[in-house]
Length: 320
Image (cartoon, rainbow, N blue to C red; front, top):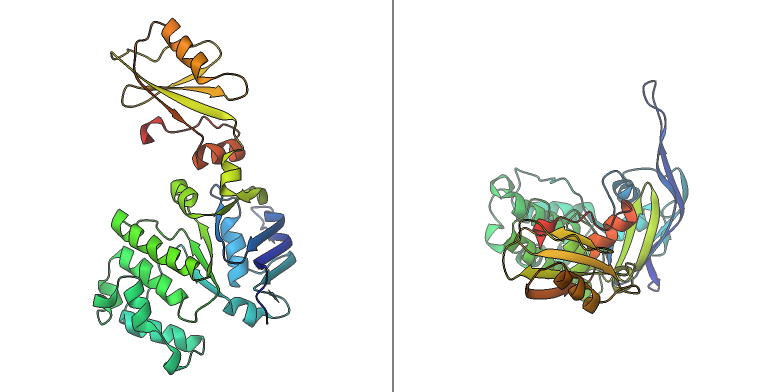
């Protein structure tokens, strides 16, 4: 079978969970249409409860859809469920570990579940790729949380699936382990594996993903190449560091001013209505002597907040 243009294609996908005496039925997905191109590094983002986990669980075969069509690697999940799911490697958000196995044994068992012949198994290669070669014969229960999460990635790849789904893969993982994990995932993607990523670390999604979809209230509210998505906001920040510390940021007519933790303040303006020169003039007119000045374009967090909460300025000033 030839490789499809879209690794995953979804049409009119709906999911309604049955209610009870105490709660009414809940619609988690409201007719989702989504195409994930083959070979992409695709981000699936959204607030808690937006429907991301339901969508992933339907792809993985854990949850049954209510309506719609899902095609994975050219296979309809209703007509060819086993073949469709075999095209996926899924790393769930929760750490699932066979604590009485060694990592090598865990991969061998997983490969057996997928019918991979012993001559074609790559257990040691996968362990080395995720930085666990020296732990191959240790018991899984002795591994740290970050190591267990990397082992789950290796388990997801034992049958060499063309699609890898990572659901919050770096939650609770320290910076160095996160760097190693992303290096491996980038390598897989460069080799042709389609990667679908959900994460609350928006800076990761911005750096890694070539295309991003945002889910909110069970609907896709944006699905665009990352650079195009970042251009959705027409605002820019001018960050001013005063020559002398100020008791409070100045009030500037026509501009929004936000204080920063380091004593600087950000002045937000719309590109089509104002300019950096006008901001500087307003700051000086307010009696502020400028020590330093930089500009910031919107990042993914700004766009995400604008689309999901309707306020691009709900930004944490301490993160800069």
